[in-house]
Amino acid sequence: MTLSRRPLLTFALTAFLATPFAAPAQTPAAHVHGQIRLNVVIEGPAIVIEMESPLDNFVGFERAPRTEAEKKTAEEAVAQLRAAGELFKIDPSANCKLGPVTLRSAALGLGKGEEGAGEGHADLDGSFAFNCTNAAAAKFIDIDLFAAFKGPRQIEAQIAAPQGQFKRTLKRPATRLAWSK
Ligand SMILES: [Zn+2]
Image (cartoon, rainbow, N blue to C red; front, side, top):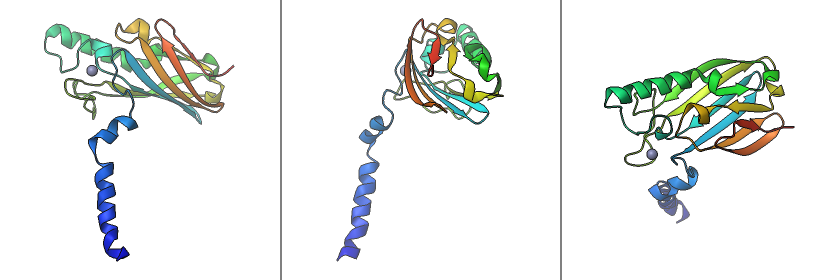
């Protein structure tokens, strides 16, 4: 009896987990215009910044560029993000140099970009890796995303550092993301 009922239960559980309405709970507020989410991980000699953002924050639209002006705007935004050492200025005591930068945006044809959170939306996500001689000494990052782009108003950051785990919110025009005294 028990054996024969087990597959049914498994099936029911799988179906429940696969229901679409379960998704928003896993990624709360993943796509809010004006908001950028950063995940900063300091481990060994590396500081890696993972970024999730609506494409709108950087270019003012959320689809493939159509006009020459839009193409130029997109190219400039991508170039600025690739020069991430200018946007993320890590505490000099960590002595970091910019390493690999990966950008993902389906709308801009970059990497394996995910679709945005719903119809008519698109993301521009990125991964910015820094190689440091003393990564553990880093206590702040000066972030220039507000100065570089008109769209972002707020940065929600999570930091995993040797000192612990931190959550921080930066609101325009603040620049310093600090997590340790
Ligand atoms: Zn959007």
